[in-house]
Amino acid sequence: MFGRNSLSIHLENNHIILRGTSQESAGYVLRGFLLLQIHQPTRIKSIELNFIGQALIQDLLIKLIPLETKPYKRTIVEKNWCFTGDSATESEEPRIYQKGKYEYHFEMPLHGNIPQSIHTPKGNISYQFKAIARKSGFRTSLECDCSVHVERSFGPLPTDLETSLIRTGDVQGQMKFSVALPCCNFTTGQQIPIMLGIRPLSRGIKVFKVNIRLKETVRYRTFFEDWSDTHEERIDETSCIWRPKVSGWWEQPLVLKIPKGQSSVRADNKSRYIHLWHFIEVQINLVDLTRKKRYLTVQIPIHIFSEKLIESEEALPVYEATPVQPPDYLSSVRQIADISGHPSVLTY
Image (cartoon, rainbow, N blue to C red; front, top):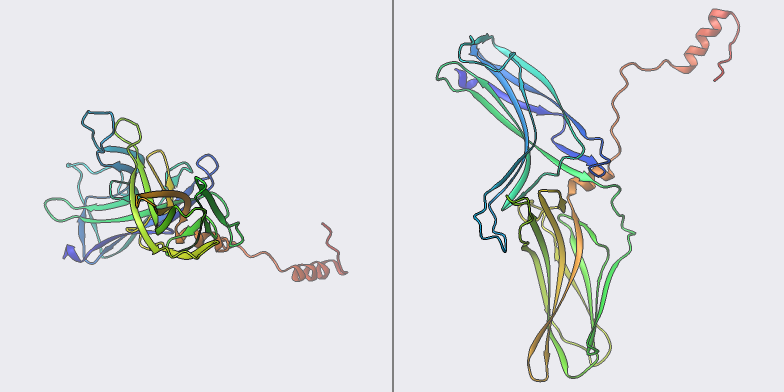
């Protein structure tokens, strides 16, 4: 039966990393083949492959613009292949494919200025192959698809020797604080150790609680080619009840966790369609002698990279095998000596 037949897409690599900025990157060539497996003679009208990259953003409200907005959709790149000649028409006769495996190889050059892949609740940038083997009549066609993920590397990532990040402040001469991080670059699945220090300078104010949050912020391109309002999402949170010493600094170590799943947290991403970044928000809850509550908020920007990007930076470069092995140096010297009747010296 036709249902036993199968169609599948095979890529050399479906996770692409572009090196450098959009102006510097040399791009990438996607290579692969389409595999059609036939189990018994089958009439097929056409075998087609489509690759499309597009940005799709939901309709978003914009301040000061009372007009109704529409979804934002842009095609970034698109290419079509028809492996049976021109695209099929209704009058074209189907061809009979005998039992066996049929491979159709293809290449797709990608420019270095394409944006990175990203998926958020309100928008995404995606790249995908779709293939179809069309049959004549009302019989079911064979279809398959394959996603391609695109990331960008702007150079070697910082090492563990990176300088720590420290923020300090003074609240109207009544309190001093410091927030220390080991660095500002982290990866998904990693923990963020934070050392928080507070020193009261006046008895008229007390700290009773501290909240620390990891937040993800996104802005989207809109139908009017403008940026949307900022959308914030809390990724993780920790807090502690403050129990200060009689005098001097009081320090408290705290930890935030970066989830692993892409549905929970996404790596930093910046393009003309979507801008996503992260920061740590430290909220110090204060109370004065009249028991009036006050809040001091400090925001510290950080960068989150994907594990795939870190692995690619740490891995050794891959080299293609030489088609023909070069001759052995010593055997070449011996051969020259035999032909001439006396030893020869090769100079360079």
